[in-house]
Amino acid sequence: MRVPRWRAVLAALAAAAASLAAAPAAQAAGPVPHYVMTAFTNSSESNMYVYDSANATNFSLVRANAYTPPSGLIRDPSVIRHTDGYYYLVHTTNWTGDTIGFARSADYVTWTFLRNVRVGLNGSTGSTWAPEWFTDSDGSVHVIFSASTAGTGGQFRPYRITAANADLSAWTSPVALGIPANYIDSFVVKVGGTYHNFLKNETTKYIEHATASSLNGPWTFRGTGNWAGWGAGLEGPALVRLPDGRWRLYFDQYGQQRYYYADSSDLNSFGAKVELPGLSGTARHFTVLREDSGDGTAVPAGNRSLRSVNFTDRYLRHRDNLAYVEPVSTTTGRQDATFTVVAGLANSACVSFRSLNFPDRYLRHYNFRVRLDANPGDATFARDATFCGRAGFAGGLSFESYSHPGRYLRHYNYEARVDLYTAGSAFAGDASFTVTAPLA
Picture (spheres, one colour):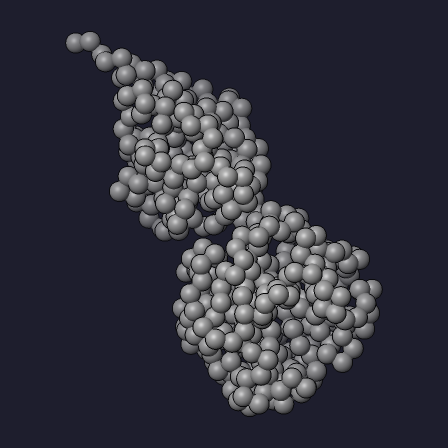
């Protein structure tokens, strides 16, 4: 019986796949960081903007007016990625009052109001400002905020509440952090057994630095006055750790409408302040969340096809501008299942998949469904069309979304998606691909 030509072609291609180990590869993937910023702006205290950066310095706007709470303000928005995979926001709700606001998002672009939490410090006559997330080394989740029982002109102190359940819907009563009166904007990180607290002295308007061996103190002030040489009139300190181990501290010179950062290797001594490009005069009191994608596994570059590990007769292909994992037998099918693996549009340490037969189009996710879309040249598309390689969960390679770490390219009912990692062999197989020689 004569073997059909297309079967012979596939057999030859499968044999050729063994030689891919020596093929040229894209730059090793990582882990590759990206940085999500949530900020209010000089133009609005009730609309939150979301920004993204590949290097913690140059931020591009993801979405203006990304979230407006049902009532009140959204000053001082702070963001974390929780263990359930969602992004959670906490923010100042008003100049006076005893509540802080919470919202949630699956993608840090579209947000849903959750609740306002009453923290019980003198009701409507007090002020509750600048809540910041802090996750301790034991996994406990806290919100640290500054409160005055006498309103905006009172003496502020830092307090904390602690999540009483896994979905962050119940909270303990406030506990004083043990910092003297008239300090606001407390931002805490823990390194080893030491808690580092960067906060604004509301009397002198300097950002100061205190340490403790317990979250409840006692705190020892290590840097006071103009200890770092940044001058006065500063507020809103927020820290992020860089991939090389250094720390970056952001802060707002609010009177001049300027935003700065300064770097440190040990949190005790910092370099000179550097103005943050593109955001001075726009962004106000923000936090920056670093997330990493990939694990350093290189991805072969050039024209390639991706064969499903758990359904070895199926390949990733586009059809009607949507992506599927399907058997391919026709010339058109083989072309649809062939992509040019190029340096990532948003980060060259990762990769993007450009269509062979529609070279102006790339695989990207939209609402977590993988599509084939034309590249409009904007930053959002670039991020959503960038994937970072890692060792496959079930052999081969897996591809982590650059814009949404923790989500992986996978098939579900043979439709291609980017979904949150879940333990088990089903997800592992669905999210693993063998990079083969091109089918076309």
